[in-house]
Amino acid sequence: NHFLMLRNHGLLTVGRSVDAAVQAMYLFETVCTIQVRAQAGGGELVQVHPDIIATAAEQSRVATRGQGASLTWPGLLRRLDRRLPGYDN
Image (cartoon, rainbow, N blue to C red; front, side):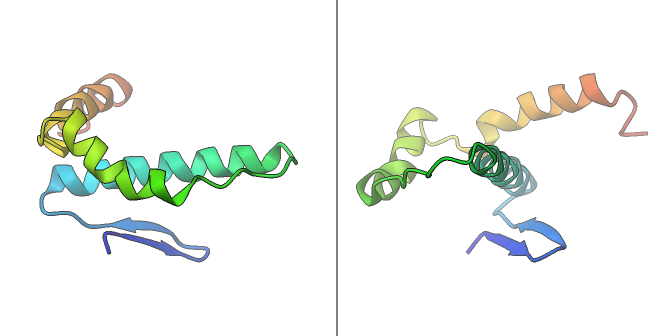
């Protein structure tokens, strides 16, 4: 219950911290972009097997060694610094 898609109004996310909410938004926007691009291809989409979906969260925890959003937050801030210098003023 961390993601909400509002029809014609965009996406909302929440998290235990700001970095977790930002990472959730980044991932939410990314998967939406991937889906729209895939649908634009006109072919039939292949559904991800439920077993893969069921283990995705655990695989993410293992890959990040439990650090989750705190691992990606500094990289997202560096990207923001490159794309929009002075945003924090």
